[in-house]
Image 1: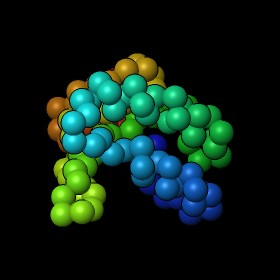
Image 2: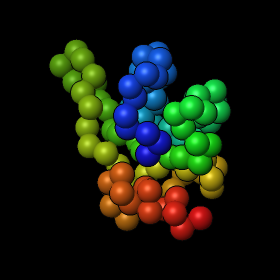
Image 3: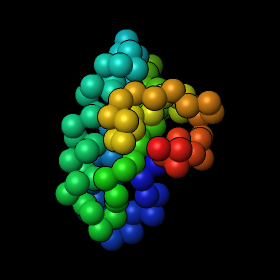
Length: 104
């Protein structure tokens, strides 16, 4: 993904990144991508000390059960800033997302 060591990064930015990852039940991967595209790019742009502009964010499924939101599994979908699109990766791992970036 982008950077996983957030020490020194504004906690509001960290929370925003965490919230952007979640796709809610009933939301397609394409809908998720269109919702995260602009805010994710801006977070990377406004925090150059921590992130490069070339990054990705992995979608995590989230559902509402028993009166609260539950995080699900990581999906095979990422939004890639280099491609500026939704990309399907071969495994739902950060390594696979990083490999995608290296190919570009």
